[in-house]
Length: 415
Ligand SMILES: *[C@@H]1O[C@H](CO)[C@@H](O)[C@H](O)[C@H]1NC(C)=O
Image (tube, rainbow, N blue to C red; front, side, top):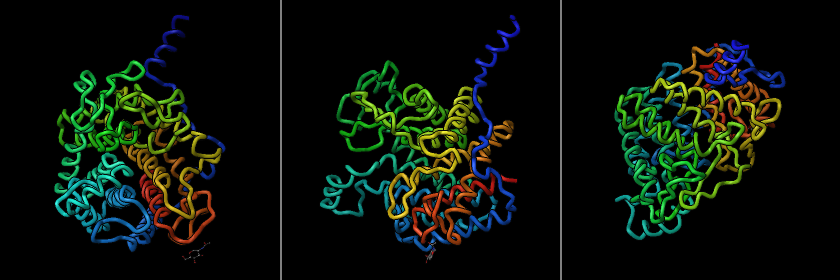
């Protein structure tokens, strides 16, 4: 009896609650394609999107600025996985071009290259519509992936510059206690639901915008954890921990899925039905890096909880496991790019989980479900619909963007 109780509490203490089994209802959770075939498929998809590049601004026709950063991310990770430099020139040029054109990758900031009148018009019309502070970080993480792939310290410096810039939009402990943050014009709420708001990150630079969301905060966790890992500097690691705690304590639902937004002034929340793959996906990535950097098992355990829930969530997939979020054959929208972020986060976690074969097996199977759907239901030659259940269609830049991370990850997660 005593033994049974202590074994039971041991399981609770260690957090061994996750079900990492592969559902029997998933469609084709494995692949027999060879490594060389998987590399060929991925590079063919890359070659099909590169003609959409506008070389003078580092962006792609048909998708938004943040989505373009994620094309560069996928290409860099592909080279990192294969150990090749096939896409190095394109990636490096794209990131350098955007960085030199827009200070700190800040496309909507006021730089020397635009007139005061243009700056004024942008300040009225554009910044209201775009998540400026959010967007910078997509480019900064692309620069980190490119640094990992190519060892280019100039690109790493871009990521540091962005980190310094966006850190001014993080709720510090001082801001949480005084209610004042220099970049914001309103009183910041020190706590919401009895939990400190320290570590939350505002997603827009507009002084009166009050939204703090999980994707902006999760990107900050991830960027900070990567920089902490690369530099061994606790200022980055501590920033990652504070922001990881914000999501952990404030913005995860009872089913272990990451929620969207909390208002930094009045604590109102986005609807509980706002469940998007990328919120959980980016946080999973940040937690897996943070767990490795700190050696603190709480982050790895939290990551396991969220992975186990997210790959089986009915919020974005059917019982066959194929992601249905962001299926948009006729027009681009932000949601189209979310699932790529989710898959990339799972892939990063896979690479850091060699000691957990159940977790690796679950992630491999999940990515193979998406891979087989793309190659059998959504493909037209080397181009892919954003509707992963199909049917195939003519090339769209957004459909291609969404597919890249699956094709790249499947190179690495299969044998
Ligand atoms: C495949 O792409 C080609 C070229 O863009 C297009 O003409 C064709 O209609 C597409 N096939 C399907 C099934 O949509």
